[in-house]
Length: 353
Ligand SMILES: Nc1ncnc2c1ncn2[C@@H]1O[C@H](COP(=O)(O)OP(=O)(O)OP(=O)(O)O)[C@@H](O)[C@H]1O
Ligand SMILES: [Mg+2]
Image (cartoon, rainbow, N blue to C red; front, side, top):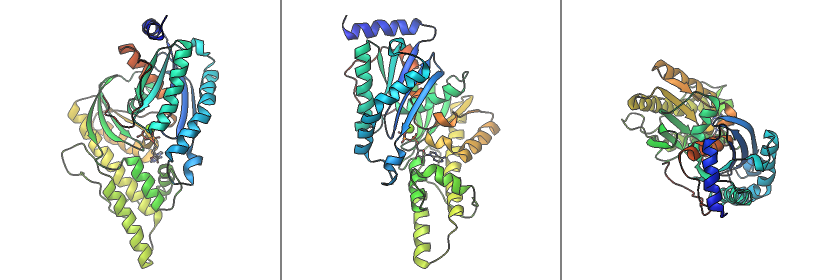
């Protein structure tokens, strides 16, 4: 039987199974990840190899190094995920793989590996949008969460407010017009002399500072849109530090960190809560790497609940890049549509559809 026919037949069987097993693969940026999911939401394993130490000395992700590292690690990471779940490749019912957005060279490593496995073992394959994956991380933590809800995706490359109309139906309500929230954290952290990636280090420093010491503003704070701009606040912090340095003045770095974090958190909270209320949904979810930030998690919880919204946020290990969230999003895609052909390609950027 030709691969395409076999994959379609097995995708049909997948839909009928009570608890189909999905192998997820993720390599969009600087984490090589694989996971095994049972049914829609039970992660049997989640293996993540992070390249952070590799990129630290450059202060950011170097795409060529990222691709090479994915090539070196992908086999071991997939094996680790299968062994951790106690399943063999033969027990896997389908393969879900991130095919965008991300670094195209990095994406191609996971995608090519997944295609090879799918073809060799006769398994259906489905390409998953990385942002849809971040949103799906919430399903892993909340077994009863179902659309519709609004999700704030705050990560290294995105700050999106998304209306999740159904498991595979998304509408973009708002977005950053320039830097993503995580990118702003990383750039400000760098200006403060903190190591890469800056988000967690800046959060730690902010705990010792006064969030009211400086008044930083984010863009589009006063308008009716659900859009953000974080590039101005980043520049304001950098200018403050430069001016102080040139004049030999004193700056309390912890106060700068706390005040910057407050400005970003306030903007994210105000707009996402307003968007959820305007959309008339019962719940507001948070996702993406910046969702690991405790100040954001707490502020958004309080503001959402004060407005009568249920608040959801994935456990921290599912906020950062991982493949359990990719397997989960892939599961819902396979339950609703046909598997992808083997000519499935990678896309550096694309709209969430
Ligand atoms: N505690 C934290 N506080 C603030 N930011 C954080 C924290 N932890 C992680 N981040 C930020 O999250 C980002 C990484 O998130 P993630 O891995 O989801 O991004 P990405 O996959 O590179 O981008 P995208 O998901 O948009 O493609 C980094 O910018 C990092 O600084
Ligand atoms: Mg990500």
